[in-house]
Amino acid sequence: MARSGTRGRGGIWTHVILLVAVFVVAAPLLFALIKATQAGAQVSGPSLLPGLHFLENARAAWNGAGLGRYMLNSGVVAVCVTVGKTTLSLLAALAFVYFRFPLKGLAFALVLFTLMLPTELLIVALFDVVSGTLHWADSYAAIIVPFLASATGTLLFRQHFMNIPASLSDAARIDGAGPLTFLSRVLVPMSWNTIGALAVIQFVSAWDQYLWPLVVMQSDDKQVVQVGLSKLIDVESQSSWGAVMAGAILAIIPPILVFTALQEQFSKGFSLGQDK
Image (cartoon, rainbow, N blue to C red):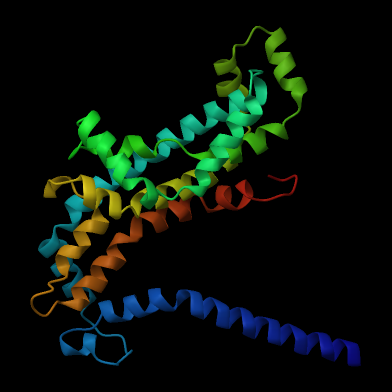
């Protein structure tokens, strides 16, 4: 009985700690959601009581900053980057697992090395190439093509393909299937969970782009939503922070929908068990 009571108290404390952790993680989103419902001076005050002005603030953000156009631009960019990264990662992983070529280990090490190079470090050189050499400045190609390669995706698919029995590739080769046929008819149907998991990460990453579109895109009607949100902030006068918070809430809806739709694939794609 004493051991049962100890386990009960331990379980309660575990739930308390988990609830506190969830609250701390969700606190910024809850704060933005509450402030998005408030109006006037109440937004800049210490009050954390929900108001009734969310639709009014959302309408001001949608019409005042033109969030609809920016969200459409971000959607096009995010979908193109996600599809392109997934396709190229599948092909790269196919080459690293099922092909033999000189210096394969060194080539894969160089791919992994790119994980250590943040985009901010390359932004000046990347701007010179995109705007000077390729003349892609102020175009969708400038914010899509440089981000089509993914070392994370290549690593993820390579590790997944290495767990697939080699007898399948031998059988496909005996049946006369080429590499792309083997990829499309065997590997892709066996990799939907991994593809879904990678798609969630890449979509959210592409949707949240801010610095590079701000640097390379000059036309306002081609700008992405994260940059468009800054139009709601007026540094020379008092900003409508209720509209800013409502705009931020609207901007995170598409990534939430994508994550919700692919939640099962996302969980299984990163699992280590055999049900992957």
